[in-house]
Length: 87
Image (cartoon, rainbow, N blue to C red):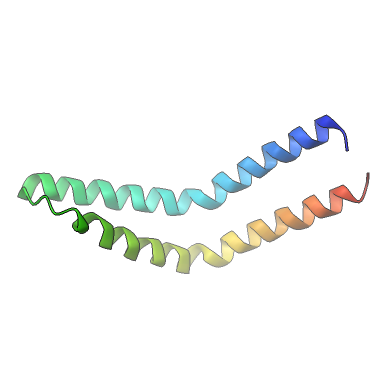
């Protein structure tokens, strides 16, 4: 296996990881910002208030996007394994 192939595989791996993680990260970021704004406006500084909505939205996003995430990861794994046997 040549260095160029390894570098391209690493780049593709990081792209797939970002593609898979992006919906979950964006959803929790938006919920966290919304809860922070609510905390600032109401002056409620309860630390656990931010965690519960993030956990709920994380489970919801994983339920909605989980099959898609798994299919993207499976496609990447199949392509990676099939490209290895060419060497």
